[in-house]
Image (cartoon, rainbow, N blue to C red; front, side, top):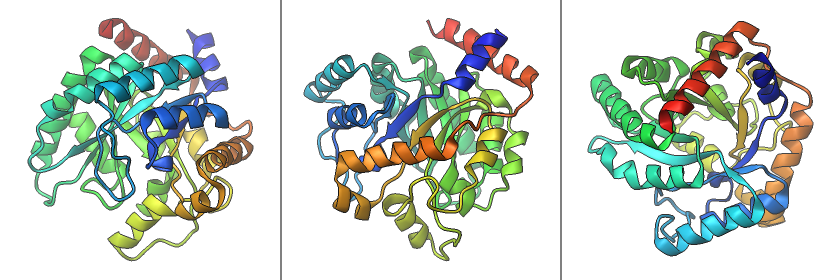
Length: 304
């Protein structure tokens, strides 16, 4: 068991997150990622209908078949899918088609975040999150709750509270390096999160300043992230405090895409990440990592 844990630590997957190239369809994302050297993709199967987002439904028959063909042709994996949003009128059953498709494509994770307008709805968030975990479990998916700095849940402590309260075997927390910075989370807090809740890491860099407004944060997060090593983020410190995880590069930058095009931008994202991370690896205690591997194996057996 320990040897398997060490193998995971030595060979993280690098995935191309859909927000990096949000105008691309899922099949296009897969082919671009393959040509740029990625191991996997992280497609958006639940659209947000934001400016610049692809217009073809990722769950219609033609797009699904094209995505499956692209995966078969390239040999890429699907690391995670997105984006299940908790809104005030949210019905978790609306996520089921995406969960089913994610399972078909071999995904292991689904990202969730909360966008309700009030601060007194903790029980509602726990219930929706827990029900989504229950729906995801038959498809072998964890549900990883994220804390965008301009959303309802803005800190590591807040998402940890919801995940712990829901208490599901396939619960999880997604850490995004940008949101660690924007939410002023001390990276030492990562050590307070059990390893079995941390499954992968969203990667991007930024300059040290933090926008004064919500709109400024959104503009940075959706249009102006930097390549790893160009900014302020302490990637070594973060990776050392995480368990061994895979990396999903979520790095939208409209100026770079206009200058370089989709494929070259995706390639440079990956090149900068690998160069910056180098031989940095998790420094969490070995006993904690063995427990993580045991839980993953047990959950995988239940899902199948």
